[in-house]
Figure 1 (tube, protein in one colour):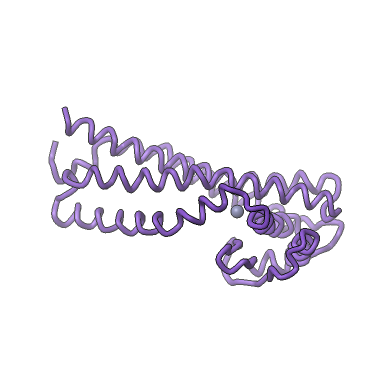
Figure 2 (cartoon, helix red, strand yellow; figure 1 turned 45 degrees about the vertical axis):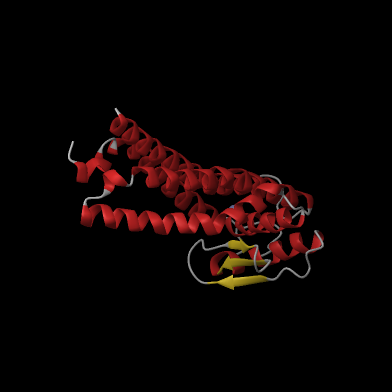
Length: 231
Ligand SMILES: [Zn+2]
C-alpha cells in the first residue's frame, strides 16, 4: 500500500452512504415539490400555522421570521427564534405548513427542556471544530502525504461527527411528532392532509438518517485502515 494514499483503502465503504444521501435528497425534493402544490383547507400560511402553534404553547415571545434560500427553515435555540424560507413563510400548502410546524416543534422541545435538543446544542461547537479539522487533514494528506500519520485523528473526528448525527435523529423525529400532534389538535390540518404532512416530514427525516449512515461508514473506514496499519 502507498502510504500517501492509505486513506483510499476501503474507499468503497463510503458508497452506500453516498447513494442513500443522493436518494434521500431526490425523494425530499420531489415530495416537497409535490406538496407545495397542495393547499390546506384552513388556508393558513406556514408563518400563521407556526404562530398558532407557538402561541398555544405559551411561546408568544418566540418570533417567526422570514429568511432567504430554499429549505433554509430552522429554529435557532440561541436566539429562541424561528426562521422560515419565503416559500414556507408565505405559502399555504401542506408542505409549507408541515415544515413550519416541524420548526415550531423544535421550539416546543426547547420549552420542554427536551434532553437530546440540549445535548445537540452542546455538541455544535465541537462538531464544527471537527468538521474544520477534517478539512485541514484532507489538505495535509494531499499536500504532504501525511494521511498515514493522521488516521487516529480521523477516527476521533468521525467519532464526534457520528455521535452528533446519532443524537440529531431523536431531535428531528421528535420535532416532527410534536408538529403532527399540534397540527391535528389545533385543526390546522384536517383529514387526509396529515398524510401529506407526514410524507414531507418523513422525507426530510430520511436526509438525517442518510447523514448518520454516511458518518458511521466513514468512521468504520478509518477503523479498518487503523486495524490494517497495526497488523
Ligand atoms: Zn428539524
